[in-house]
Each structure stands twice: as structure tokens, then as C-alpha cells.
Figure 1 (cartoon, rainbow, N blue to C red):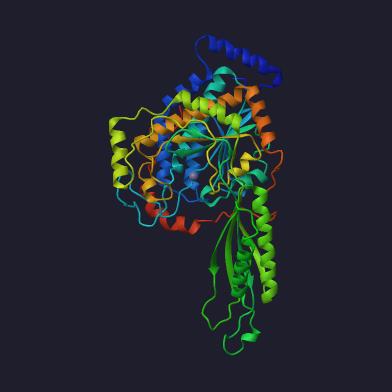
Figure 2: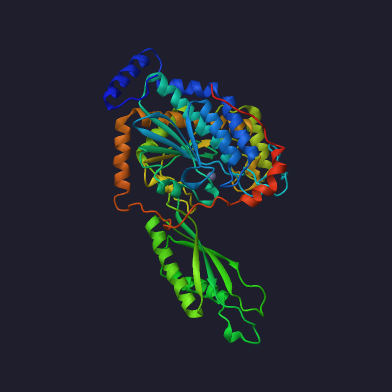
Length: 502
Ligand SMILES: [Zn+2]
């Protein structure tokens, strides 16, 4: 198969497609057939990652499995990009356009749960688990990418499909580093997928920008009764920083959010503390607004140090731009959502959902049967690091119907269903919507041009800049100790499957 198609041969490729299409087949049909053929493989990928249940930056087994299965589908897979050992960046094809599928596969602390059981029953007490269903993302993203590749191959469609699994979404961590390292600079458009209880897309600002940093003050210890005048109290500096920010609150725009926790507060009262630490999150509706507040926060730290004769250093933890959904791509995704429809739920699946909702004391609504119509979703005040991608590349956002309505994430109950038939059927629908939307972007220069026009308008007044300090580096040891503590017990539950695409 000659895949190295340049601009000159694009027209020829398009002509080929028309020939094939007139024979009663089109790229989306081929992609959907590939997904139907691989539903077991997709389920095994999702289920395997569920039992790996790896925390952010420790997604080693998950990354290995994704690499294996993507390679079985003909993809070239790089692990370890941008200084993150568990980063997965896979690609197939060559030349332009480059369309990326973007998601994550990390679990959450203390999320361990026995699947399909309505009571809190961890597989392993205290162990991590998939109580947001990110495990399903692994199945959906890889299978959709494979399906796109099958269609591109069959119809000689030029371009490249990329799959990006960024580590540690739950710590709002990796995507700013991937953007800074240039991973998205040649990408023409992207689709970000996430589990939900329905098929949906959205456009405009979807959530908040955030900057998270730890401020550590350094003073001088002394006896609290005998020679306190020799001491420089680092915890006084922490308190003054806290009070200083409270004085600032009145003068911030109403969209801001700021919250903190005091993570080092001294040892005992008769020892003047030489170390104190306060950990801040600053958020706002836009990246520049969050940065403006953050810069004021740093000035307050300067003042607190000056008042107490201490010094301080800042440990950057994470940053994110708000997700900005591209309206043009959202329109294309919605068409595919409406065309694919929702899964045909069985009576047993609906009963299971209602029993589960009953057990959780929430409204027994069962499962969704009609997709969410297109309209501007309200801006949430939470943050996701994949927001940075959306300010660099025209990006569509989509959810797929793989969880039970009313069961909220970041709670053990959300870890009950991510390996159920409800999840598997929702994943198949998600993979079809995703593959169809990527194919739309891959095959329609008009759609890409319109999406770019929308992107240029959306970013006209607000230009992206990284919120990462220049010296910031990803923390490969994040969550390592917890994972090492639980991994041996968790390994007994591994499925030991080696799914392959066919
Ligand atoms: Zn998530």
C-alpha cells in the first residue's frame, strides 16, 4: 500500500474514494465494520486497564498494553515522550492532515471496587481504582484509531491519525508538557473523548484555567520560650500569605476561585518553626485571568517573607487552560452522535441500572436513550490539563454513554460499572462517533478550514502562552510509592489478556 501521498496525489486519492463509494461503501462503513469486528478486543482493552488501575505517572502496565494493541493494528508507538515514561503517542499514516485523538487512562486513589456489586466492596482495601471509568478511554481511543486506519487504507485517504494518551489527568498534569515539547504543533485538528452517561459534545469554554503551586518558607528555629527573638518563623509567613490573599479576594474578578491547604505547619509550639508550606490552587474562567491572580499571589509571598525575615521557594505542581470546544467540530460530532444513536439496551441492563440507582438512593431513571442535543454546555469551574491542547489546535470534545446516570465520578460507586456490558456497549457507540468524526476531519478540507476559522476567531483576543514556569519538569515519581505498595496485591487480578486488532 502506497501511503506516502502528497498534495499532488490527494486528488487522485479522492477520486479513488468516489469510485469505492459508488460501489456502495464509504469510509465510515468500513470504520464501523472494523469496530463491530473488534468489540471483544475493545472490551478486553478497557477491562485490562480497569484491573491495572494505575495512578497518574505510574500507568506502566496500561501503557505497555496500549502499545502492544496499537502495534497489532499497524501503528507506530512511542512511549516516554516529553520526559514522561508512561506517555503514549501513536501514529499511523503520513503527511497531512494530522488528526489527533486525545485522552487519558489513569485511576484514582482508594477507588478499588468489586465490579457489578452495589455495596462498597474494594477488591483490595485502600488500593487505587477506576472510579471515573478512564479505563474505557483506552478501548475507545485505540479501536476508533484502528477503524480510521482501516478506512484510510481501503480508500487511500492521505494523512495521519494520532492517538495521545497523556499521563496523570487526575493531577491535571501532562498536556502542558506535551504542548511545550511540540507534540501538537503539526496537528491540524483533535478530538478529546471522555466517558459520560450519554453521547454529547459542546463548544465554547467548558471549564476553568488552574495553576497549582506549593510555597515553602524557610526561617530559623529557636526555643519558643528561651530565645524566640533569635527565631524567624516560617509558619508566620504561611499565615501572613493566607491573610494577605484574603485581603486580595475583594479585588478579584467574580469568576475567580482560590483554595489552599497548609501542608507544613511546624512541629510543636515551643520550637519556632524553620519550615512552613502552603499549597495553593488559583483558578479563573480564562488562562490570562488565572495567571494575573497567580502573579498577585507570588507578590503576597514576597511580602510575607519580607515581614518575617524568611525566604521561600515555589514548587510548581500543575497548570491548565480551560477546555475550549470548537463549534464547527462540535457540529460535525453532533451529526455523528445523531447518526450512530445510543446503544440498544437490554431489559436486563435497564433493570441493572435502576436497581443500582435504587441502591444508591437516587432517582431510578435507568439508562439514557436519546443523545444530548447540541447547545452550549455551561462552563464548569473544574479544570483538565487537556485544555492546553484546545488552545493550540481546533478541538472537538465528546462524551460517550458508558456509565449509569446519576452515579457521580470520584466515588467508589462509579467503579461498579466500567467493565459491565453497559460500559462495553457505550464504548462501541463512542468508538463509532469518534472514528466518524476523525474521518470527517481527515477527508474534508472544508471542515478543517471552517474549524480553523472558528479557532482563529476564538483565540483572536486571547493568545495561548504556557502557564508552566520554564524550569518546570514532569514528576516521574508522582504516585510511585502508593502504586508500589498496592501493585503486588493488585497483580493477582490482572486479566493477562493480549488483545489484538483484526
Ligand atoms: Zn476524567
